[in-house]
Amino acid sequence: ATLRAHNLLRADHMAPPLEYDDNLAYQAQLHAERCMQTGRVANCTSNDMGGQNILDLKGYHYANDVVEEAVAFWYQQMRFYSADGGFLDWIPARNFTQLVWKSTTHVGTGMCRNKGRTYIVCNYAPPGNQIGEVGKNVEARKNRKWEKAKSLLSN
Image 1 (cartoon, rainbow, N blue to C red):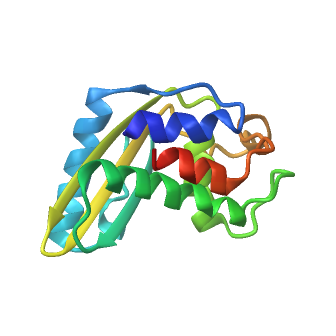
Image 2: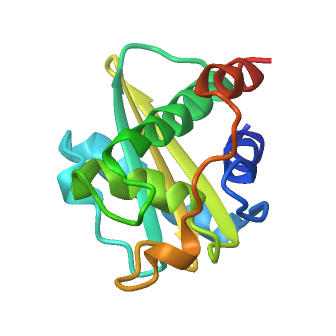
């Protein structure tokens, strides 16, 4: 589910497909467990390996659905990014830009569920969101409508 969701959306931005990395996944799992232990996403964001996206969901979610839900959520943060390479709001836009960052080649996912909460962590290498590199790493979306991409994710 992780690769399928990422690569479907990356293709719309001319970004090459990602490969799954077990070491990134292991580190992502550790971060997800730390988030669960602390109850805070903010305590889990140090990641020496590369880029990272985190989502905290309330309620129970099925494993495949929750990864696609997280990827779709991060992708929707595109609304905070301007196609000319500017940011309308950096904090949420960085999740989107990491997702479609062209020079990122690998992803690993971790997830932890307990007490009505689910934490999803995706680690990326090499990391995206490098200063001065946005213009050549984040392409404008092709003509596909978001609704079409969302429906493809749910199939």
